[in-house]
Image (tube, rainbow, N blue to C red; front, side, top):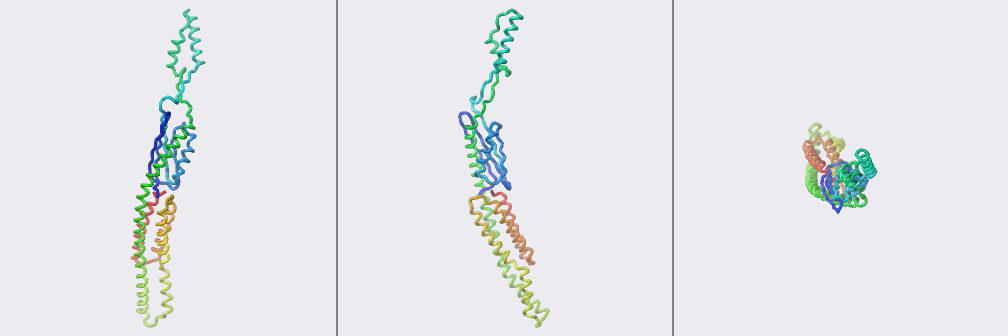
Length: 294
């Protein structure tokens, strides 16, 4: 079992790049994957997305990719030679025409030109994304693995809480079953006594049984108790699964809640309604935890 909340981080380094990836996730009904990466690797976004989706099925997941370039191996110098030629020619021609001086030293001109960005430009070389992709995917894969480890650790804590609450709910159910059996027997006896008090010996036994059956059927909660027991067995089985079970558990919790509500609406006994309140409180605790499960 995995929680949907977690954090993972990884770094992969080569002679040219250092790729750092951080992934964090929180609760969400579906998989909402948000990727933040430098523009230079926009074309790798799909590879990043597919790498994460291999092992993450639910949650709002944010992936942050940072690329640090090591040294100047990925930079290139661009000299705008046509502009340099024009400058040199203009300076030499104008200097000779205006001052009758010999040609201006080309070396001196170039010494000045290299400091001017209009003539000499240092640009980022086009990245070799074929090589870079392998580093990015490796870093994302490692960060995702760390994320899943974090989610599994929190999932183990949630599993313990769910198991404890499921046992508490099962305990309440057993107590309710025992009480209901006693309550039905007491109700039958009291019903017969009341009729005897009102009608004396004129009680029609067949009519008595019919009326009693109708009253008991109206408040009969055996079917709901049995279904609730089955739901609890199913709940325990789901907790043992390795795959994502959050949606399945969420649906099962709704079914449990429905059975408990029906028990409350059918019965007029204060004691049974108190059981219903206790069970609804436990189911709500379970539901809150289930919202965190992948």
